[in-house]
Image 1 (cartoon, rainbow, N blue to C red):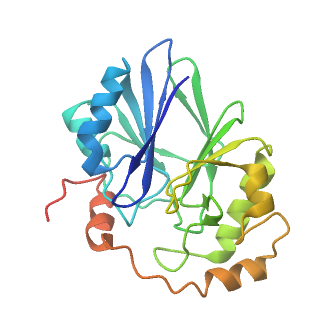
Image 2 (cartoon, rainbow, N blue to C red):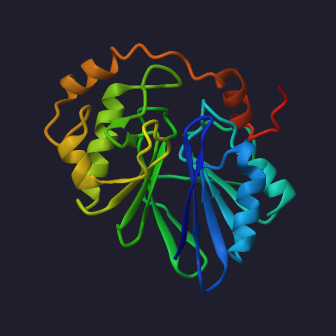
Length: 238
């Protein structure tokens, strides 16, 4: 598998390229509108064609590059969201649910976990061999996504992260949707042991107490990002 991890500094967002070496087909996970040209250039340099634009959820902190990536570069690609995402478009859309398999070319196979809590439509994708997991805004490195807006629920997120822990082996590499401290990846085992919010023996009550008292400011682009992303990533017009 061809694999690249990319970073957008403005919102500390990770984007991932997963490519099939045999067919040249690729998936892009959590693209960012402002990084559209960079991502398309790299995909083409790698000899790949994007067939799947996967979103871990409807983002509130950045506009996805999915729609413009389809329009400008890869019109055959499908944008993949949860059936619970509430998106308001249908062209080029694929909705997935718990247990679905996303096949990219002949060698890349991603399985879908529904991991609500940050939003109702949050998804986690893991490779068939369980060596890599892409957790979006559910599980972070030594943290997790917030639960205080956009259908957020600490109780649901607790269940989702515990499901991730129980589904995947300790050596599975965790690739989160964001990191704000310069960390690139972790492992399931590391997070079970060292995540200060939700370690392996954390209680639901203890986790909820932490999450319900964070008092975080809203993401700075929420008023632009949410309506744009419900339409698949309309062009940003500041």
